[in-house]
Length: 221
Image (tube, rainbow, N blue to C red; front, top):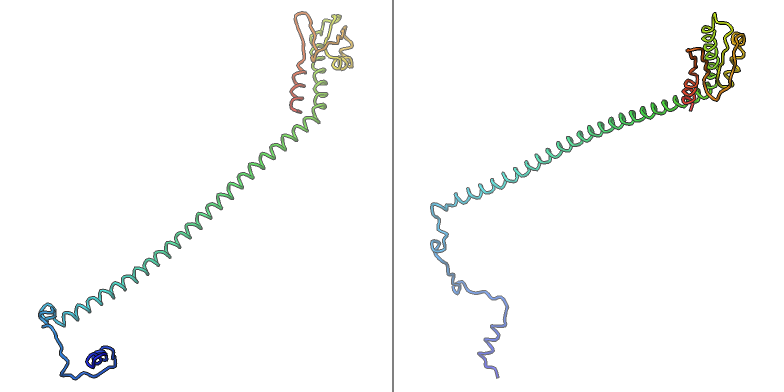
């Protein structure tokens, strides 16, 4: 069985009820301030400690103020740069728009000029096709007239000469319609050639109608 002393000890160890302890039974053990390093020396006076605390507070306040000023300056620089970039972009956009309009206008003008040139060429070709037969008929008449005048100049005063004119059928027909040529002793010989020709002694007369007509036909194609 547990003894009474053991029960008392067990009760003490397991009893957590607060109990007042007399002051005379409380002993407080402390170290001297010099030993603990808390001596109030000249280097660590209370005034110095307060001043140090104020200095640290001022430094912290200055740091916060500087940081806020830096943020404000950075924000102002950012806004200024944003405005500058916006204006630069607007300038570049306006320049690009102006360049685009100029290039478009130049391209349209070039296309219009080319189109008008093609229209003019087409109209000229069509006109040449329409007018070519009329021009050819007119030239044939002129050539026959010039040829006849030249023949009459050569035989003037030499009546009775036997002449022989060679050329294509349609020009010979035109020559036969002229009274001055029919009054001469002239033989008309049809040849597969484009020109009228006449040999008289050492003189030769020949037209150049074929070349003119060929030039006109090429222009009409």
